[in-house]
Image 1 (tube, rainbow, N blue to C red):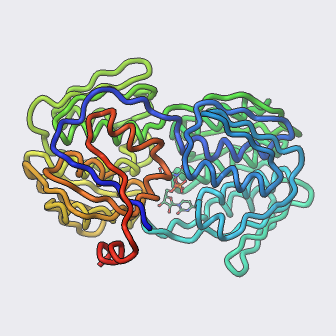
Image 2 (image 1 turned 90 degrees about the horizontal axis):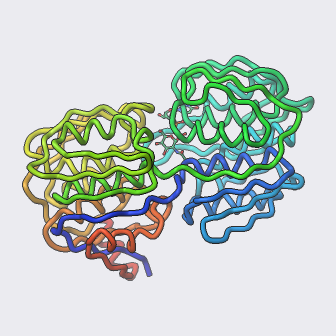
Length: 429
Ligand code: UD1
C-alpha cells in the first residue's frame, strides 16, 4: 500500500498557521552534539522523518537520545563508532556532515559519499578539501571517505569557491574542536549557519562573524553541553504563504522571523501581494491578480532555491509571463512536468524556466519527486479546480510537520488515502 494525499482545490487558503522549528537548522545542530560529552537540549524541534533519521545516526555513533513533544535531549558520553554507512547517508544526505565532528572528537571517520540526487550532482569536494587543509588524511575508496587526524585537526584558512551551506557547517563543527583560529572566506550566510554558530558558542566555543561571508572559529580543547531553541522554518513558512498567494487568500505565518526570508518578501511584493511583518510573523493578502516576476535563485539573502518550486507553482496563476533561473542546483526542475499535468504552461531551457501564467489549472494525479517539488504540487493543487492526488508523499514527510492538519487549518480540503502497487505504477508512467 502506498500513501497519497488528495486535495480538493479552489477555495482561498486563509487564516493562520503555526510554523514549526527549522528542519535545516535541526540537522546540523543535532550533529553538533557529537562535539561534547555533555547533554545538549533542543526545543522547538519538528517531528520529521529527517530528524528521526539523524537521531538514529547519532544513536549508532554512541548517543543517548530522548524525543518528547518538540524537545530533544542528546548526550554522547563517548563515541562508540565513527562510521556512517551508505544506507544512512543515502536516506539522508546531510548525514555526511558528521564527518567533521567525528574527525574532531574521534580523530577518525568513515562516511559513505552521498552521491547525486534528483536535484543535481551534489559533490562534496569543498568539504573534503577543507578537512584536508585542516590536517586530515583523506582517502576515498569504494564510495566511502576514510578520514583520520591522528594528532587532531589543526586550524586553517579555508576559502570556499561557493558559499556552500553544508561545507560551512562542516568546517564550523570541525574547527570548534581544533585549537587555534580557523577562518572561512566565502562562507554561507543562511540563518541556519547563524543558528549552528550560536549553538557552538553556547557550548563554550567561539565562532565570530556567522551571517557574514567571513567566519572565524576559535577552536577549543573541549566543549560543554547547551540548551537551544530552534528558529522557525523559513521554507515551510514560504510554502504556506505562497499557497495563500496562489489561491487568492490571506494568511498569517506565526513563528518565523521575516529577516530569515531574505529576498522572498520583496518578490511577493513585486507580485502585487500585500505583505505585513511583525517580529515573529509574516502575513500576506492577495487582493488582485498576481503580477509576473523574473527571479534568480542564489545563496542567502538571495531567493532560496528551496522555494523555487513553490514559487513556480504560484506563478502558474500569474497574469503574464514569468521566469525563474535556477543557479544553485542544476537539476531542480522535476516539478515542471507534474505542474504541466495540471495544465500549467512552463518551458525549460537549461537552467531557465519560463512560466506562462493562466487563470486556472485543473486537479490531476501527480508525483512529488522531491520534498520541495511536493510542496509545489500542494500549492498548485490547493489553487486548482477539482481534485488532485499527490503521490510519493514520503518526500513531504521529510520536511512538513503535521502537513494535513496544517492544511485543514488553512481551509484546504485534504484527505490521506492509500493505493495499491498497480495504481502507483500507473501514475508513474
Ligand atoms: C543545503 C540545504 C538545502 C538547500 C541548500 C542550498 C540542508 C539539509 N540542506 O544543502 O535544503 O537547498 O543548502 O541552500 O540544510 N557544492 C559543491 N561542492 C561541495 C558542496 C556543494 O559543488 O563540496 C555545490 C552543490 O552541488 C550545489 C551548491 O554547491 O550546487 C550548493 O550546495 P550546498 O549549499 O552545499 O547545499 P547543501 O548544504 O547540500
